[in-house]
Amino acid sequence: MKALILVGGYGTRLRPLTLSYPKPLVEFCNKPMILHQIEALVEVGVKHVILAVSYQKDMFDILIEKQLKEVEDKLNIKISLSIENEPMGTAGPIALARDLLLQDTTDDDTFFVLNSDIICDFPFKKMIEFHKTHGKEGTIVVTKVTEPAKYGVVVFDSMGKIESFIEKPKVYVSNKINAGMYIFKMSIIDKIPLRPTSIEKDTFPLIVQEENLYALELKGYWMDVGQPEDFLVGIDLYLNSLKNKNNLAVPNFNNDIKIIGNVLIDSTAKIGDHCQIGPNVTIGSNVTIKNGVCLKNCAILSDTTIECHTWIDKCIIGWNCFVGKWVRMENTCVLGQDVSVKDELYINGAKVLPHKSLTSSITEPKIIM
Ligand code: GDD
Ligand code: MG
Image 1 (tube, rainbow, N blue to C red):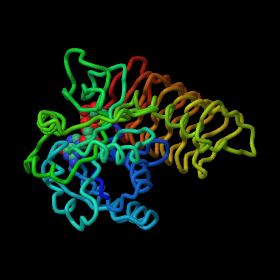
Image 2 (image 1 turned 90 degrees about the vertical axis):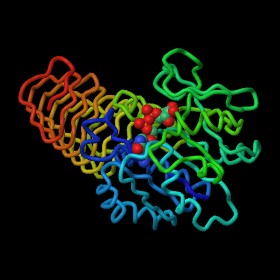
Image 3 (image 1 turned 30 degrees about the vertical axis):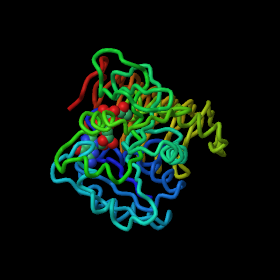
């Protein structure tokens, strides 16, 4: 079976991280977002993954040569890029990848399509089963959320047949939303024009009208991690799920470190004495955390250094940053790649663009350009 992952999009809501890397390649819990998905697809027998790329194409070319080649070999699958000259939206890429999707189709007439920024216990096996049971053109996964207006809202009957799909509704319709995972029959390709097209606004309403789209309700956690607040909540949900499955190793250090709750620390990271790490902290490769640092609810991406006695809560610290001593940082700060923060500053809710140096405190949330 094949899967097409939508990896275009500008990822504006995850800036400044997405100024350096496309959103699907940003590490969520120490692994590029799409790798979480690819690994789960492989588990249900997907052999060919097509990445629908529009933004930062060069980055994917580099990655294909390095990291993705490794993934191909390790997982014994094929990964192809389907490159857009202009952003084709969320359905156009399916039409563009027509030849790749139809290539070597022998026994299966269906394929997966995924948004690249969602995290959950991927229900791919259940999707295949449910899709077979109803036998119609498409299956989409739905989940319950508290803020449905941010998503595509789905209304369906007791059998799962979708009656309406409304993308980002202005008035309340339902709290069941599109979780961004689909299975389609190949026949859907003929219903999508080869131009920028929205699956949510153009394709779904059409196949809903034909009574051809069914909803499968997701059990368990789900999060679109495409914006900083949700990315941080996603870490909590993901680590908790790993822990419940006994897949979260408790880190073992020789020195005096206090670990609180769930944490994920790369084996190459160095942590100093008397640090307090957790809950809900991820620390990437080659990160150095000096003595006496306190980290809660945050992601520290690779190659970053945090100096002594700094305190960070609810922040994402990008790649290759340097945060000085006695810094206090909170309230969903996001540091882009290669940002430095001088000693003793207070940073409140700042989004800091790549390569900046902060030399004075930021007391109110703002963007530092
Ligand atoms: N190839 C390609 N080309 N991919 C694109 C393009 C494009 O022009 N535009 C967006 N994408 C990709 C994004 O990278 C992402 O993986 C996916 O399409 C969805 O785009 P988002 O920008 O993340 O959309 P959203 O989060 O506002 O809404 C979507 O996801 C929700 C669930 O998280 C919709 O599908 C909603 O209906 C859904 O509820
Ligand atoms: Mg999204």
